[in-house]
Image 1 (tube, rainbow, N blue to C red):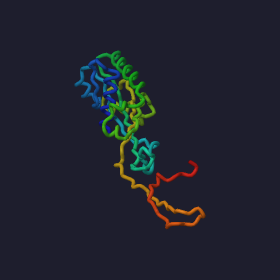
Image 2: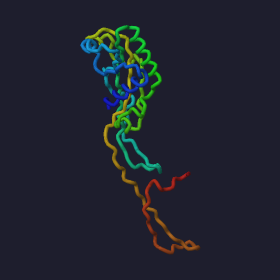
Image 3: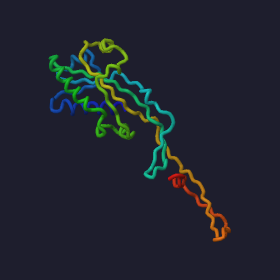
Image 4: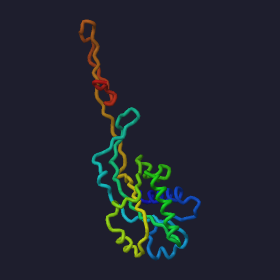
Length: 212
């Protein structure tokens, strides 16, 4: 799942903010050594934290229904994880870095969810939207200076980008249909039973519902 979010976020930035600019989008940690190797203009989207969004945790199985509304399969609800990216721009001049960050910010503000056509097989298979938030300082659990100290680099302007993605816990499994029996009796006009009761199996989802 993580690599699919990486690819989708990189595509959103490349196509939405940097199209035809020749600016690369890198995912490596922006350490001092990395910065020394990259002389061409670059936008760096470094994944620095992954943690579960406990507010989205669900219990029990999720029912999957067919076109008639009958439950045919069940699956465990997905767990949701917040992937936190530190997005920075790297050029020879601070003014150019600010222009790049501004272009990325404008692009990501318009991207409330990752486009479905950019999602990988796992994320697309959940059938769920993958929301994105940008420049939300509350998503950072530690001071920015500590993060840059850990990277061994110098403090730079940056954008926090948080993608909240579902992670499928287990496979789907079939649910056998619930079957009941209907008793059929024939009566004469005077109310007398003229034959023995006959029973016919019937799926529970086909039974009439009182009040319908």
